[in-house]
Length: 502
Ligand SMILES: O=C(O)CCC(=O)C(=O)O
Ligand SMILES: [Fe+2]
Image (tube, rainbow, N blue to C red; front, side):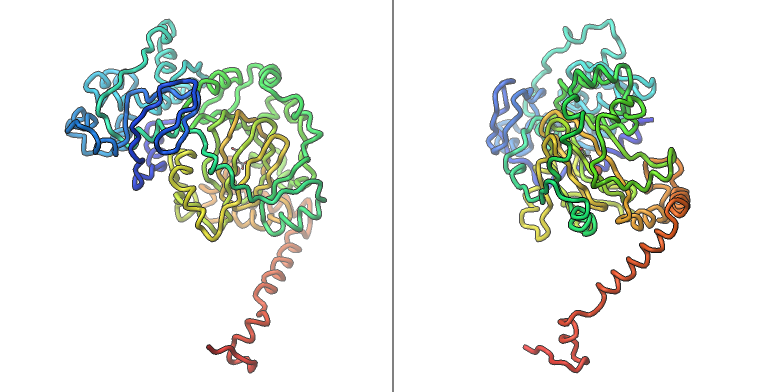
């Protein structure tokens, strides 16, 4: 159930960085079809809707001739609450109450029309009734249409009133992030290692063993999916099958109807782990690149955790910073479109990202665009720079275990990803599954607590002696790393050798 409590928790986990308020922007976009540049050097998407309710960043208030911020006057006593808190409270209301409250003041009108509130109402309803939704251009209309199908929302849906002198960074940023084009400088850094036609041994030696990302070119050339997969084909072969889209399940044509119209900060993403069971031909349209053939979780048969997903999403959709489940590594192959990747090694927590001490929860900015706006720049001066690239159709990226990564689709995209355990990361995975809080950390399976024992037993049965061999190898490697180098011995004054003194 996607209850309001969960929404509250979600909103609390997604904090906007309010320290750096957007610089005042005097012009609002008017045109729907042109590229629009703001005073701040940001470019708005060609199809941007103008800022529906006239919300302005707080900075503009200082240049305003009006003594009042109508955000405050219309909220009465609760004006002292932050925008996030006001929205958290409104998230407890039903649609009808939100509608009534929106008529109380200009301020409530703006707050109660905040699209994520209506989005959550729609998703909650869909989840309860186990149904999809027919998107009607915005979430409020979608909600109204789902409650009253006889009501013509297209006719009733006005353009929305512009409220004068309403200043709020939170609401302004929400609109800006939904409508911002990715800047060239966010896309241009490309420092990933690229390889074409390397052998499996080279891949293991140069990338898997040292746990380093690599972008592999030319290894999807014989995938039928590369030729066959487009919208028409997928809609045809998938028929009425429903796929996981956020908390709901949707038919592909319903999803495309939504993704064609959507203009929001965090578009819903189709991310389904059972696609090949639902539509077996999809599983036959691709094959695992040879570098990733070792797949030790397969010893668990049907009890293995989720391991492969079809991913479909419009430009602007994507995955905010996370580490992949169960300490597995992954590969991600782009069939259509392109994706911007930013990866940080396991020992570097990305800026703006705050994992809980047990790693079970991660608080990060509300949206991927917001991360780029507020944090990307700071990584330029970091000693440990992220690995970055744009992964295009026909290319595959290897995501080593433990690496943080963020992905944003630059166009409508279709991809396949698989997570795997090979002998290179088997010990890591076993360690992870054995952690004391396995019941919250382990994912993709129902029986989280027993996965470790089941997996270990199944590996011992299928590959006797492998775990012990790997343990011996790991001990040896550790001892080698700990062995003092020549320089360590000369630095040690008790070793009798020479010593530097300055
Ligand atoms: O394509 C994406 O959104 C990225 C998915 C992801 O995080 C992965 O493949 O590990
Ligand atoms: Fe991932």
